[in-house]
Each structure stands twice: as structure tokens, then as C-alpha cells.
Length: 328
Image (cartoon, rainbow, N blue to C red; front, side, top):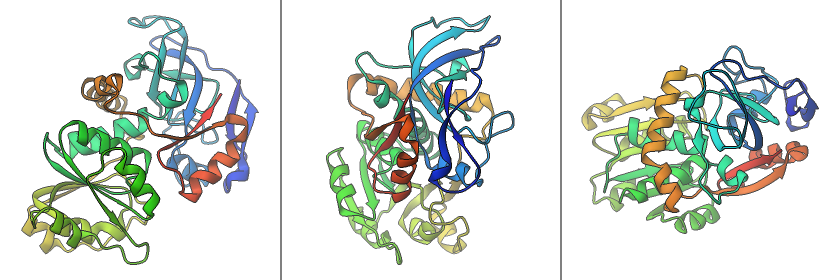
């Protein structure tokens, strides 16, 4: 089968399409014919040798989510049939024509939705729901501060919060991403500078000095002081990524006065049962909203798999709004 393979560790030019052995479904496994697989920043890190997959997965074949059709069922699998249209997160190797999956990790693609749009959902959607609701404690009618509002996870967190009747303050480094996010329901926007990111004063102004109960952060170290200053009493900062760096200086006095919590999360290395729980929570709370059109996947561009290098270059430029997808 054809798959994305990294021919070494380094730049986008190392991402190529090669032929590798096709997997075979064993007992309790499902084989999926992948039609589309989204790119994630984790793939860029894996290409550079900075984010290896869990044990048992190839370091040179990336892919954390996919959409396609069930091609075969291993023994003992029930509830699914060959030909069912499905999507899911994966620990790796999803950017290939075929991928193995646990049946409890599969989500059914809504009728009429294309494979590229479906591929834009699993990683961003499950991560956003887990960070915002499960870990962040977001509740109906609440207010959330979501950074990198134009990212795949950011656009999903925005829509989930809005579907729950919430108010969303979003940040971005470019005005065009903020304008696109407004079309998804963004209530308040803060344009953040790269060298001196400040947003806490504006968050406090918007909230009448109350602050926000939940912050979903993808940037990390450069934003931490402002995140803490933006918190409402007993608020949560959920750190999903560290695009700006992992090592922050924290004023514990600010954290203590807010009686706040800083929660770190990552989806890929979790044990399978935790991923199943996160997937099933998303299926319960969000998939009905996806099916009704209240929450929509945001697809920036779908690239033919053969153009994987160009897709990597686009994601590295950070000029995409929503997800970048490969079609197989």
C-alpha cells in the first residue's frame, strides 16, 4: 500500500510516498481503507525526530487521524460491517491507504459528509472537547478563552462552547484568522503580538473584571503569566500545546489567589482505555451537534497525498485556518 514515509529526520523534503506492507486485521481489530488523513503539528515534530510515536508504531510513518471505509473485520468484532464509513484518532501510521483501529475508537461519519471533512474532525474535536469540557470543566453558558483560535482544535473548541450557549474570547496573531473565526461565532477577539503577548487586561475588561473560568492554550510558556492573570476564581488553564516553548516562569502567588489550576494534557500517549473514554464522550456530547450541522469541521485545504511535502510546508507556515488534509 502507499503511505507517507519520512526518509530521515529533518525538513518537509523528507516526507515522501512509498510502498509499505499492508496491515492485516487480527482478533478485535478493524482494517480501514483510508480515504483522507489530516495533518497535525505532531507530524511535523515526528518528522524532525522530536515526537516519537508510542511503542509498536513506526517512527517513519505518521498520522494521528483518518476517515475511510471499513475494509475488513478481525474475529470477535461486532457492531460494524465492511463498507461502514468511519473516522477515528490513531497513535500513528494513519497517513496510509490502510490502517488498523480498535472498534471502540471508531466514529460513524454523518451521511453526506465527505471524507476530507470527516478527517478534519477526530483529533481536533476530541482534543477540544476533552480540554474544554472534561478537563477544563466548561459548562453551558460559561465563558472560555481559546488561544490559536484559527487552529483545528481552536475552531472546534469555539464551536463546542457556542453550541453549549457559551461566550468565547479568542486570540490569534493575524487579523484574517480572527475575522474567519467571527463567522464561526467568535464573540470577542484579541490580536496578540508575537514578541510581547498581552491579553489579560482585555480579557478582564470584556468579562467585567471577573476573568474566565477556562483557558485553552496551545502556545505554552509565553502565554502562561497572562493566562493566570486572566483566570476567574477557581479557574482552569488547560495546556494542550507548547508552540511557543515549554518552560514558563509561574507566579505562584497569582495562581494561589485565584485558587486556580494548571492542567497539562496530551492525547497520543494515553492508554487505549483513556482514548476510548475520550472518544465516547465526544461521540455522546458532540457528534449529535456535528450531525445536525451545529458544529462543523473546518477544512483549510485537502492535498493529494502525493503532494505531502507541500502540505507540510503549508502547515509549517502557520497560515492555515482549520485543518490541512491529505487524500489517499
